[in-house]
Image (cartoon, rainbow over all chains, first blue to last red; front, side, top):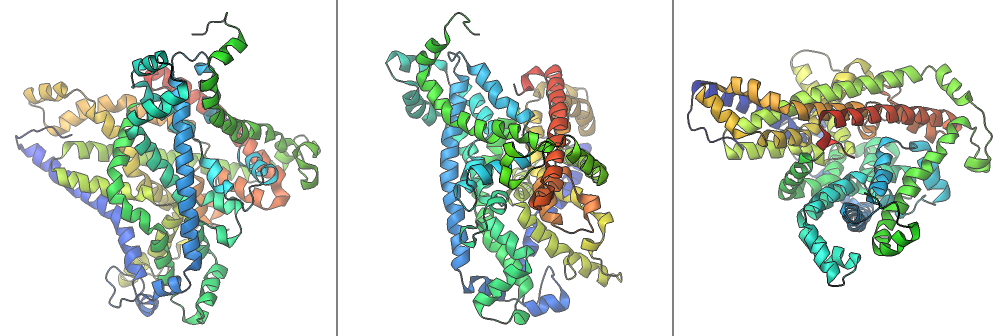
Length: 298
Length: 307
């Protein structure tokens, strides 16, 4: 990206120095909070009570984690739920979204502009939370139903538009010659177009998977059965509610007063968001790449 | 475009498979987007659970009157707009600045590492952000530790509404820099290198190049991002405001936005009418702002229009 100006003139050096300093500070501000949480989760509770959270605690301990994992059933269930919802949701979402994008970019489809507007209009106007919520709960039976966690995010107009744009770059000739050979549209889409759309699938797949994994909103709205909680909502409960903390305490058999509450909160945070942080280095360049492609068009 | 002469059913027959392929998305949109639009009438009804949406009686503008009388309409509107404006302006400054610096400095590894670091906050949920806030700002957190070691009193931000506008803008910017800067980075890479080479020949230094080439070339992108963001000015980031504030009544006057207001009113069932009215108000206003924004974008740079 940087031009290879090998001439190290003064202004360039000054610019680089300022740039490095600024970027370093910014990057530090971005990373430091994570460091604090990780360190906090490994700090002994007594240390926290006396000296507070610090960058370099003197007493380490894994009591926070021990408390969280004393009765791992609920966390494991949350992991299971989240994984299920993410895998199923992302797969179906990818399929539907890219398929719709493919149809709408077919120039020989007479109604493609009508349908495009049909989808696009929903980005201009919507009914808001109240009708949507009542519809889901009262008429669709979303209360305590796994579908409530999967369906709301199963299709996104934005991702569909990105798919449409991407697939337009696939030559029409492929579709045309396949049709001449007698293939039907669905076959063309599955066997010919999809294999050519791997970057698209990777990008949208990652975005969708991230959205599903991090979703707490749908869980909060529709689920009150503890066995069906997903990770982020589980964390939300633990962080926000004294009752939830107490319940964890009771399951561990310890007296609430003796509990490493603070480090437990931090440990729970790490446990629920750990996979994302761990996977991050591996997937982040796909994100940047995908965003760049998407950024070039809208 | 259309062969208006082709009969309707013929088109269906000829495009059977394509239409079937559209079906899942169409059903989804009808169910989750268009049908709820019909539910907007709830703003004009006194919803009673037993009667359902259609059976509940009409009450005209009563819900809106309650909304006005409650005195909440203006604060939540003001908060929504002002916060969004702040998010947009501060966010863009950081995102554009970061993009420009990143594209001009040398050092491949440093650039990769900083970009990766700045992208990280995007990957966590607002729940985790709330945990981070708590960790940093609670009575035993880093901020208070530093304050006490410098001789100041501890502060409890959860009791101090005045700091939250700054806090929220900072957090939102923090979370969005990496993600938001990509658009500008892409635009910068698209700038014709010859412009820079010509500037080099003319003896321009790096600052001049940025001010006279990079920034002017970014103006279309900036304008579009600005317009699109302004279009959504009546829609708030629910996750941010809900997770960081939760139900802290002391902070609400400074931090309640339309979205969180609608949510909270909805969840206490006696206020469905008022929350429906607020939601209706938001949907209508948003429609106008977004449509105008899209129209303006089309005027400025037709390629970038979404439709």
